[in-house]
Length: 368
Image: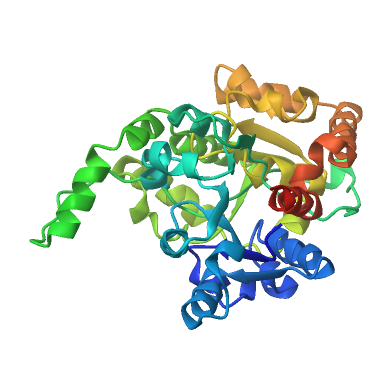
């Protein structure tokens, strides 16, 4: 294995090697994988740095590009620069949905074949064809191995919780600027095949319907940022949800697992129905010991056992779903929750742990 590992991340808050600091990484969902990877690299006397640090070493002549293995997140500009300098494109990964990261998905046919390993949501593999390297379905890492949370008594819990920031896809507006780059960005978004498909399969509207329905039943609490600014939503939803949000008064959530553990069910709707696109939402529920109300990846059962969540797509409407939820006894609920905990301890779930996913990455990096 090359004795240098470089993480190409587009998040400025992670540069200057900050993502490898366990305390800093713990502030961001999924980021602790990289602090665990740094521990493994240290044990093997392997350098691991972020892309900005690597560029500095190479430009100074301290490092040779052919000594460097790249882990690139989506279409990172510094990653492209390092590839041009001669660094090896080892791992390409993306944990963003196509409804927001559509420029990356549109480029996959050109970008993905350059990498030896591609860790992407399953639907992305249909966008390119190559005999080089390997594809690996993405699993979202979200917990530490050995993490144990006490399961709270069923009858002492509230009903339904949703933890999500208020965000929604927006239609592309014609730019009122004469700058060519803004017009070009608008044109690409308007004609993006990825975005067109993602909008057709978006589930953000369903999430808003769930809020409206369960709020009418006085059964839901919401946590998350920016819910006081409904201008991000389509106009019809701004009107429909204004009194609901005013009454529920959503607050930021400092400790998601502790917060949701006080509820029986959690609304776990992905941003889009996309093959393999399973985020931290459902795994967080299993860790917290509550029942996920899941809507998202059409192939979710290929990754998560069907007996540990409620698949919302199996119900014709929210009334039918609600009736089923009310029929669940404490005995049945505990069976579902304990099965979820058992799954977390199984080999199949280890890619969802920070340590397990870091070990997987390190093994890929060691392969020549």
